[in-house]
Length: 244
Ligand SMILES: [Zn+2]
Image (cartoon, rainbow, N blue to C red):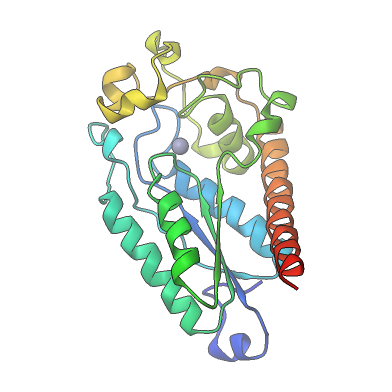
């Protein structure tokens, strides 16, 4: 695996053509989790992928699209359009440098602009594939690990578990919040700020979090991520085969 700790010579001596770009957020995560939560998780997931693929692990885009959290102290955000432009520029730069695959590892739902960005990039870039992996890469198997697979949207059981696994010292006391479980649709973030919909800015069941659940889900994320990449490759080969 290559990182920004390596030199030009290190890069020259490998034939690495895969890059992994973590995308996180700097936004309030209630009273119990740090504002950099999504960035720390994106980095961990991306590192697991880069290690498995012997790829170039890029530094994270830490500040991203968190406008729906702007009323929570500690939040810093850029506009979604700006994020799309940054990812486009990074992809073009990597393609120029000879990379043939970029894996964008996103850990924040508010970075939804990445979806159309990746879809378009794959039509625009002639020599590079861009794959999007997200926090929900293992969601279809969350039932094996978590008590709550619904309504656990932000700083809840899933994220508190991951933090207890990765950085237990960063998990603070959970503040009681009745509205944290209220079933307003996630789409209501289009109209309201998260700190208006909940008392403490979290949305879900953080008290159910454990380090063991966090460890298991991080392993599952990498496993599901690798399976997904395989599936994309196999589909590409099948399509090529049919053309012949
Ligand atoms: Zn988060």
